[in-house]
Image 1 (cartoon, rainbow, N blue to C red):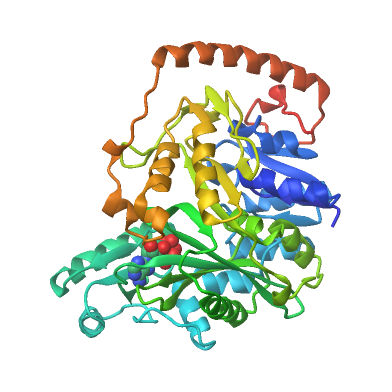
Image 2 (image 1 turned 180 degrees about the vertical axis):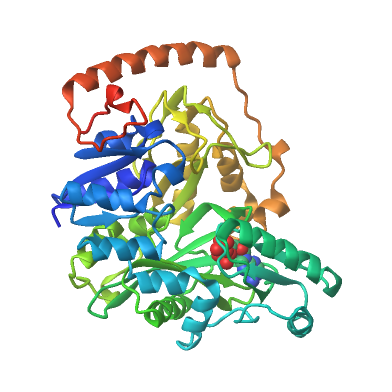
Length: 500
Ligand code: ADP
């Protein structure tokens, strides 16, 4: 593989390119008009504009991306996460065009993309499932009977669900129809498929997921677990590895269950098997994510692996070069997702210009981001600014290091989840490891944050940055060359971005 196109943007595109560079592989960035000065575009060897900002006119244009690959002699596509990463049809087309898809087979993506198909696949491989149904609900009365038997509260979940959408809690039989209708309409709108099923609602669960790798030769390893219980809106904000509660015996059991889930769909490349863990440390399969996960860096920091390099090697048909016994956990890692969100206003996404942006530095700190000072956070995409990741020799050191890193991180111009992260890291229940997925509802109150913003300071720095960026842009434009595809509907060519 000599040239890889990264069908993504922001921090993950940059993260993939860095590994490619270390492997001597050339990179191609794709971008939307609004991202033309993004670090991932500037970092790549070549860069191609796909179209206007909305994803369906740029990053989701699979056919156009394949066309770019052919034009530029690309021999591998890395999809990152989100966008086309779990689109079986895209993976199929990439392969049909003689290009390597750096991910699993379209068949694996298809099976694990449907929670119901996934349940049926893993069931045959001895993976424990949350009590519930494994067929779509077709008869409400029958579903109510099953729910009574399981015992309320139960969850109605959309088979095609993702990002917490199409998921409804039902606490008693009388609510069933109403919640069912809501789940179905949400699922229909978001995924075009309204099939729903029932699952027991586990009262105080932890979200534990296992990183797995599989190659084309039938070899599998698990790269230990990540604890992702600190969530808002069923979505993760703070993750850590390893989990505080997993003993070596349980680690082996859950790791092997994850490998079985991977084997159930003949999985290869990197994937994540998600489980919920109840108060008695029983674990149940939730779903498998058939891509590199946002929070993969914490697994890298404790294992010493570069998961992107492993993905590329697997896509080149190489065997995994180590065995399960070769892997061990070194220290502790924590990730905080730094979102442009207002933790004092129900985590509502925020937009604006990063008028001040200074990353923390020093031993054990890794910041994966896709922004620079002066850039705007576009409204079109996920509002994540960065992943702040720390490593420590043990959990206590990792917590102290994360608190230092949060204090050093300077972001002005948008509200972020940094103060919320500080709140979590200081909380006695987090420190003692006594957490579940309800941490935010149980303990968090926005009054507990005290952030002060000086409006005058913002104005002055903002003007300074605008001038600085203008100068930088003009300088870059005279130095760099770039390949591109004709896009007559826009005048972006006048402002051609650089490619380093
Ligand atoms: P999605 O694909 O929409 O992210 P998941 O099935 O992965 O949905 O679940 C997301 C989160 O919802 C989990 O991390 C957990 O917090 C919660 N959850 C899911 N299933 C259950 C369950 N059966 N009982 C309790 N909480 C659950």
